[in-house]
Amino acid sequence: MTDYAALIQWVVLLLSLATSLGIGWGKRGSRRWSKVLGCAALAVAVGFAFTTLAVYANEVCRSTLHACQDHGDGNMSYWFFPLFATPLHWLLMLGFGVRHEPFVVTASAFDLAVEAALGEIQHGRSVHQRCPACASLISVERGDPAQAATTGRIRLRCACSKCDRLFESL
Ligand SMILES: [Zn+2]
Image 1 (spheres, helix red, strand yellow):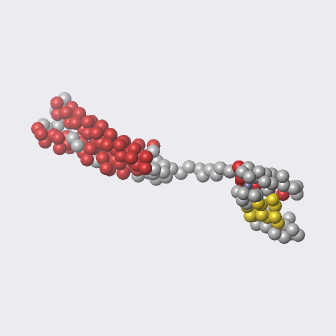
Image 2 (image 1 turned 180 degrees about the vertical axis):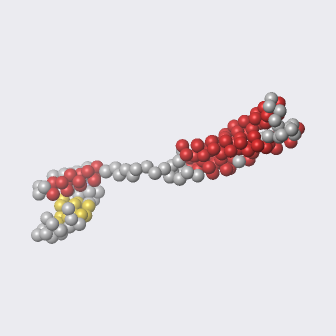
Image 3 (image 1 turned 45 degrees about the vertical axis):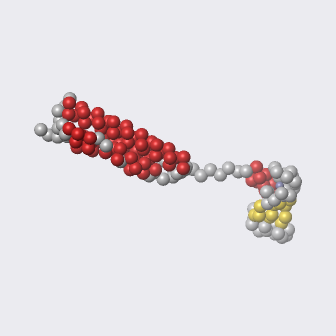
């Protein structure tokens, strides 16, 4: 009689590994501690779930399909592959690196005020923007007034220095 017991357990093990890969792919992203611990719990859950499946598959294979030999207590040696593989499940879940998301720069209120001030300067108007934090008028200093329009440095300042920016040229 052909014995498929070992084969079935390998298939169940591969399925459990594939499940871990799927979970890992779904959770790919930065490795925070909460995720590492969460995946550890999931890995144990996957280990137990597929061990249950392995026991069930072994039972069906012997009793219903008669394709697996009865190994008596030895059947148990075929049950725990997925459970023993729990650390491997865990590694597979964490194996996917950082999810590559588009890098988004959020302009702060200070950036917006400075940007508006720059717009005024470029249009040759005087700056009337105020710092969102200290409410002081953003001051403009030019390195060389004679050349400021083309090459000079322009320094923006406010009283609390949160709007301080130095531009080589506009
Ligand atoms: Zn300020």
